[in-house]
Amino acid sequence: MVDLTTLTTEKSNPDSQNFSSMSIEEAVTLMNEEDMNAVRAVTMAKPMIVKVIEQSSKTLQNEGRLIYCGAGTSGRLGVLDAVECPPTFGVDYNTVVGLMAGGESAFVKAKEGAEDSPELGKQDLQAISLTSKDMVIGLAASGRTPYVIGALEYAQRIGCPTAAVVCSADSAISKICPMTITLLPGAEVLTGSTRLKSGTATKMVLNMISTISMKSIGKIYKNYMVDVKMTNEKLRARGVNIIRTLTGCTPKQAQAALEEAGNEVKTAVVMVARGVDCDDANALLKKANGFIDHIA
Image (tube, rainbow, N blue to C red):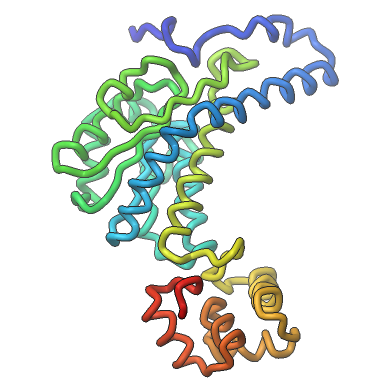
């Protein structure tokens, strides 16, 4: 049987020892106070977070993929971050990939034993034709998940850059992966339930990795998602508002530019700001490698 007693994520929190007998207000107050430790844990890990994002940005700039590998809560967080990138940043679903032990069905129903197999981690990467251009980021609160270790070791064997996000000190993963972000939010209110503070801290880091990496390939202008996809009424309204805000035009002008641009917000922004048609706007963007900031 696996010995979990040494894992940071399995420690008992002395402040929640009476959790089962607390009032609702007391429990809410305690959990709120404990969640602050997730923020502090991310703050303490900033130097390594920067190193990981430098590499993830380089990977996207070189047209490689970011691939999250995890199990349980960690795996679900990776899938969540990956699937939100296409509508937010206009990339295809092969740019940021979330792999989870047990496959897609394990997102809603755990597949017993899948996370215990290093071979499955390797096989899942082989199934998506991993190359040395890509980057694999292992996600494991415990820092010991065999599925994740197997994925990282395979990626390293073929020369693929690797990183990891864990929530346990001196983890097995940190020993094989130099670029490991170690988050230490402390013992969970519910002992061992890493969907709590550990999950929150991990999600915060994934937000940083994907958002800042996308910035590095021109998917953000100022603080707007200028490559957002117009897939529903809310996003169409957001697109119009982005154009209006960045150019100072009227709603009618923004709507007209968006339609002429084929619902491409970035193109419409350049059209209005520069007073050019769609073709000329796209030519300017191509010359600037997709960065509005770089248009001379």
